[in-house]
Image (tube, rainbow, N blue to C red):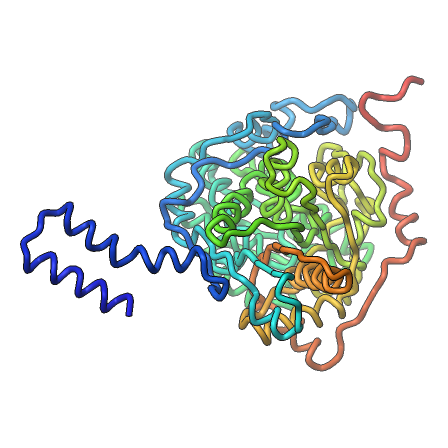
Length: 508
C-alpha cells in the first residue's frame, strides 16, 4: 500500500507539473502516515533509522565517572604507564583515546563510511518471544542486533577504527588473539578495508571446534594459528609442559604480543576487548539504541549484556549509564546487569586487584576483577567469554555499584537461546545466549512481581559459525561447569595485586 501511494503521488506531481517543493510535499504526505505509524504502533517489530544517523562520535564514559579509573602500571617499575610504554604495541592515536577524558571523540569519516555498510543496526522488539513466554503486556523486551556486521558480531565496530588508525600510522602488519573467533574474523575483514595484513592466534579448543571461523579468516587473506603454537617462544614453552593444552585467551595474547614486539617495529598489536578505547568504539550501539527507543516511545528499566572482556556490554550500556551519571536518564533508577558464564566467573568470583593481562606476563598491570593470569577455562565451555579478567572500566563500575553481575550455567544460557531462536528466527552465538538468559530472568522477575518492565539487551552476534556447540546442545551434551573455588584460589596466588601491588602504592 505504501509503494502504491508513493507511485500515485509521484504521478500526480508530474502530471500537474508541480515544482520540486510541491513534489517533496507530495512525497512527505505519502510517507508521513507510515512514519507516524512506525513511531506509535505497538505491533511494530523493527526500529530502523537512516544511515545518516550513524553516530558521528564515540562516547567516552571516563568523562562522567564519579571516581577516576585506576591507571595501568608498568610491570617492572610499578608506576603509572605513560604513552611511550604502550608505543611498541599501539599507534599513538589509539593510546591518546585510551587515556582521554573527553566525553566525545569524533569518528573519522573513512571509518563512518565503512560502518555505514551495516550501521545503524536494527533495534528489534522481541514480540514473538514475549508471546511464546506468555509474558504480560507490560513486560517488553527489545534487543539490538549486531549480527548484521560482515563478521556476524559487534566486534567489527572496533576492528574498523583500529585498522584505520594503524594504517594512518604506517603499520605494516597487525597481530592479535581471538577466542571464539568473532574478533579474529572482524579484524581479518577490516584489514582488507585499509590494506593491512592480519596475523591471528586463536585459542586452540575454539580453533578445533570452529573450523569455519578459520575458513572465514583465511578467506579475508589473513593468517591464523592455533594457540598455543610452535610459532612463538611462549607457545613452544607451554606445549613442552603440556602438549594437550587447550589454550586460553591469556596464552593467545602472549603469543600475539611476542609476534608484535619481535617484528622489528613493522607490526602492531590489536585487542578486541578489555581496553578503554575498544569499549568506547562499541558505544555506537548504545547511542543508536537511545534514538531507536525514542522512535518506539520507550526507555529501558534494565539493560542486559553478556560479559567476557566487557566490550559488547559497554557498547549497549555506557551511553545509557552516562545519561544516569549526568542526571539525564528519563528513568533515574535504570539498572545495568552484566551476565557471565559460571565457567569463567571473573566478575562474580574474581578479585579486584592489579594483574597481568596475559599468561606470559608481558602486559602492563591493569586493575580489574581477575581469576589470575594463569587461569585456563575448562574445555567443556562452549562459548567465548573465556578471558581471565574483566575490562578495567567494567570492574571499576562494579566497584562503584553502578552495575550488577550474575553468573549463569551454560545449559540455562543455551535453553534461553534456543527459546529465543524458535520465536525470533535468529540463532544466537553462545556468548549472546548469556544475555538472552539475563533478559529472560528479568522478564520472569517482573512478571512474578506484577511490575511493568522494559528490558533492553545486546544480541551481540549470530551463531552460524557455532554449530558445533549447537550440535552438542541438540544431542544433550552441553555440560555445566562451575569453576571450583580451590582452582580459583590457586590461580590467584600469583596475582601482583594480592602481593602488595596497588596504586597509590601502600606505605611500607
